[in-house]
Length: 389
Image (cartoon, rainbow, N blue to C red; front, side):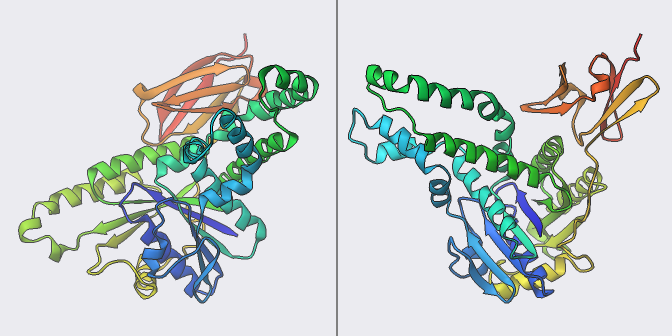
């Protein structure tokens, strides 16, 4: 199965582009599922029909689904939620306030993404198209496996053991219920699914991400930041979709000043994403909704290309041995030297760009060596290690 994620700044038309791509592929005879993991679902609006939380047939070879995050969350961590609710209601009467407290920031979107795994593991479709939440929100969720890995590998087993040994005494003293094994099972299950999701996201033969942008300065800047972030986390961006391009005949009179700004924006997109395939979509003279319109637009976007293919794949991280030393290459498009923070711990390089942090493994042979230099060349950060004395 191929999986293609569409994302971008809010309002750029990612839902329409995702839906148009799904229609194009379905028309070719491939069996396609398109899902929305954005809590502000728009697939129903795009297809001009009611899309359910279970699969809904849109046309031949195309099914759609608007994922219900609350429903998916209940399936993933119902035991843990019940336990926390029990604690919160010991001295109160529960109610809507408690339910609101149990909505952890980001978890709704995360459980929506688990649906990608479910559909992939079922294997009933040739292509899965995903209309994601805005880029920053989606990517931030995928940091959880790294941040919480210690919880599973070290802390969780000790906690489970200590609860069994000292739980009854602690419960008697504190008057608080002890978590049952089902609570720990929920945490382990969520962590395993998060790790599986990240592994799938980084499988470049199966999954790729497409950024939807418009030729406006502020949108282009965010697209570039998101592009850098995706490469920092080793996700493959295989295409840029440039939407809402004003045709020349629309740029007369009142909109005449937009001609120069749009050309500058398109030039910046061409220069910034020089190696990545780019597809251009003119602003339509009608709303991008209904299956018929989306099929037409999908055919216009991918005139000569098969949209289900992996359209581009760039090596993100590699290292090579040079005589008695090593050079590590990390692809960081658009990053600036002044934004970088580089540290090294035992076995890892810790690279920070603004508020993003990523860890890269250091080859065993290089772990005893010191960094001698770091420089940018052709979009790669090149980190050189000093030869052994």
